Image (cartoon, rainbow, N blue to C red; front, side, top):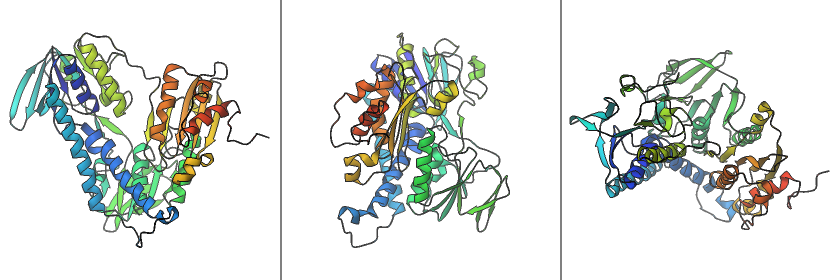
Length: 462
């Protein structure tokens, strides 16, 4: 079986390796670098910078832990960027090594479908046509270009541009207080940039639980990261000698050295030969697929951002595995009922399943349990008492419907509750499971106990 994969991002490279493991002859076509946006311009480089920023924040509080540096810590941005690039390079080499190990052929260039069994690749050394029995499209997405915010790579920045700056800006307007905006705001705010965020919604990270948003905004305020401009739209932007000037719809003028625009992504579906091949697309250009990642054209699959489903690297990976298995004659379907999500701000945010505001909108009754980080011995020991765990349960069956964590290591802790949601566990089953002491994960156990008012380390309700 010959399989050609267009794109070597999280969905593409995983699909390629899985297909090779199943015995396929695999060719991967990539126009840029293996790892896609996630590895080169998204998940990994931002988390590398976030780690540096968080350590810098900690360094300024070392005296609280009994450590005297005898100097004032200062960020070395050039060194941070160098470390970020090294982290990315290591991962890129790792993927290339995996390709070599599994016999996956990597062709550098841009691929285009010439029907359901042929792919034309155009690269710097010319073009070639690859014959395929199956094709998996994994071309990803890019920052959306919005006319009101013309990216110039110097003053008005996309998230890609922000990862290649040569110095820490003195001030920055962040347009959009969603996941990307809040992560960059948290990073540069920690490094000393004067951050002003503008958001059209009425709260930060509006996709998350309302209480989570409230706590994040309070923590941002403590760090002087300003999110004073909610329910606000920017109508016009001007670049002048003194910086970027943004004019809001309600008459405000904001000024900063830089502007970061983080309000959406565009799908990479142009010039792929989709129309000529007859691949159906949705209103946003997304490639329409079923739960087996099949398009309407037999033998052509699509995974990741181009499907427009959930723009998350870990979703793309599972979609890639499903597509590879099905392309090789298997039968695997995608289940989106328990997809964890994380936001790498300080404090971190993680969630899975139902949000309380969603339950209210759908008329679903839930019981909730909450447990504060500050009630955990481990939280005090490591100096991370800001945060809470919130559990949503079905009042009749006791099944876990959702979980929300804001606080240190939230992204690592959410998976216990992802398993619970995925497999229909009850809060009592989770609460009765022995958790190691002292850990932050004890808070998950206690939040589950709190659903029934039985948390040991919470005072009796009056």
